[in-house]
Length: 360
Ligand code: UD1
Image 1 (cartoon, helix red, strand yellow):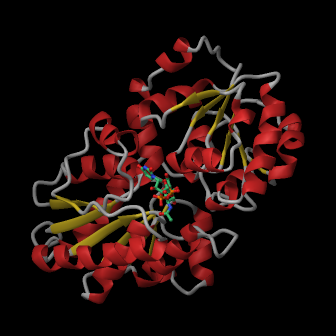
Image 2 (cartoon, protein in one colour):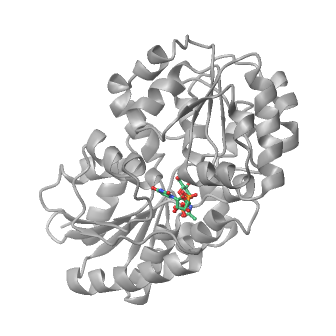
């Protein structure tokens, strides 16, 4: 059977690392990997492929920059060409980026079934690009692989539960698999001791594209950084905005880093007192590591971690006060995201539908 996988942004490379590993266990599976080019810096793309040993993509479409409409439109055209040439049995997509939607739409229009990993998540604001991408992708996908029980409930409300399979989270699989290789060298290089620093990431459009909001966030973080070091691997989009809005002075106390590869980032997550983030992935990775996240978002697709009292949401202006309320007690894994075999469940399900030999 032929599976054509489309990735484009950093969180998708990470998910693909573990799912590809599972696909390789099955000699009947031929995987064709397509990289849209959405993320192109070495730190955001190539370095992740090499550190997680992901195969080089067969097609690299080199589509990035421009508005969301331009990016998604160009991807749609190019991905359709690849699909017509490769004629896969199924197209595999991850998450909620522009690359996800473009691939799902290109395949659905050609009547090629789409399998969506990380389906069923829903959050506010409804007009954020990721929410639009994931809702539309779920609508047009045939197989919805759902990481959480909350995701299954969401799909039921939309009448999509018949296509849904609870799998657990592939990011949990990867975390367990790679844990022995997490790299603590960055913490050592900066003399950061366990529980004595905060790890920060920030990139959402509603946090970084508006000068006033970004300034509010940085003001609050600056207050925090006066008594505990903040380590900040900075996303290219956020770097651009800080420079554009002339806000660099707020960062004088921060330890600024380039975007980190997965093994380095997890090395920092494991020992941080707290994680402050607006990343979907990091909210769960902190939980896998027994840590907590303070999330600078009005809502999250990973709401179960809020309901369990592990993570907290904050508005930009309340960041400092929420931080002072948050304990850094360690967190016990309650198995919310499955058993670490999500990739296996996904690949076996695809085989049962598309492999003429193995499914007999
Ligand atoms: C995208 C995803 C988001 C995901 C995030 C992870 C969408 C709508 N959003 O957001 O869901 O959480 O990736 O990082 O798809 N840039 C660079 N170098 C790069 C990548 C981006 O300079 O390697 C610049 C782009 O030119 C652009 C900006 O950063 O100006 C934003 O990049 P883009 O991929 O559009 O969105 P992200 O904010 O990364």
